Image 1 (cartoon, rainbow, N blue to C red):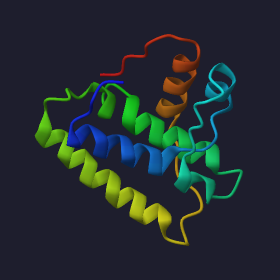
Image 2 (cartoon, one colour):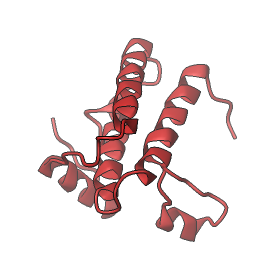
Image 3 (cartoon, rainbow, N blue to C red):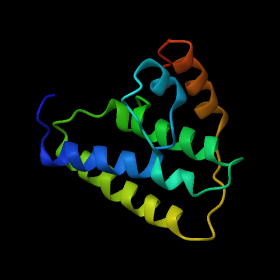
Length: 120
């Protein structure tokens, strides 16, 4: 495994803290990779898919975190701070649901079908 920079490690740690719910597809393809989105597991079962989609979109979509160069330290640090704020807000007891837009759903569907979805 390649060695990660401190900033890359921070981003990965934040992602794991926000999104890691048991990923059955990943588990089926690799039984040793147990990815649990810790924070999302604390949410009501009917809202967990929304939280998961929201976080995946923020980390992977080309217009969000997925389109940022790993050398763009200023933007990565900014998004890292925003992610920590979002995580703190989600960990508060009163947050039980989140809004998922149609764009997020379309992107997720395209990802599942293996197509890249461009929105610019």
